[in-house]
Length: 166
Image 1 (cartoon, rainbow, N blue to C red):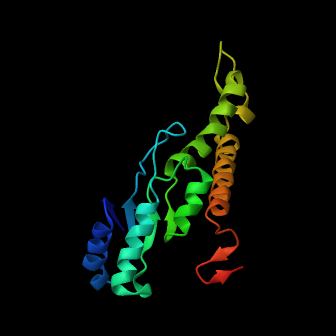
Image 2: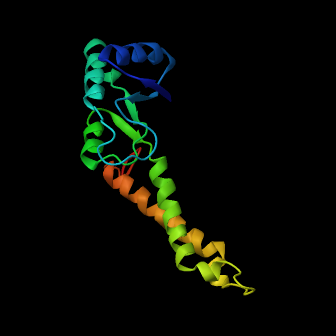
């Protein structure tokens, strides 16, 4: 996978022409997306950069040249912007920040609600059910699973595989 800052359709065309002789590739073009989590409205995406770049590539090299794009840094993106990018060739979206939070939040919630049971306070032994990591890590895993299911729904991939629908 290649990540690059894209400013114009010509840049996307240059990437296609440089990489296509090597075979199939995924391209993480930048269109305002960034890593991390930001308040709503702080990140200004311009998905039309992807649309215009794909058009430049296919106008010159034909429809078979349509690139597989990666939405690099997609955490926190509004659903309508995610869906817009799908129409421009995005086949993968990175949501690492969202998945980290989805895993961590239920664990922190458990620790805070069971603080006295998690720690040995004032000579007490705590509560094994509270401090057993299998319990709170399971909650983290469930939070992560829920977020991944949401991502599949957002990306319109629920029930689909590389080989079709299930």
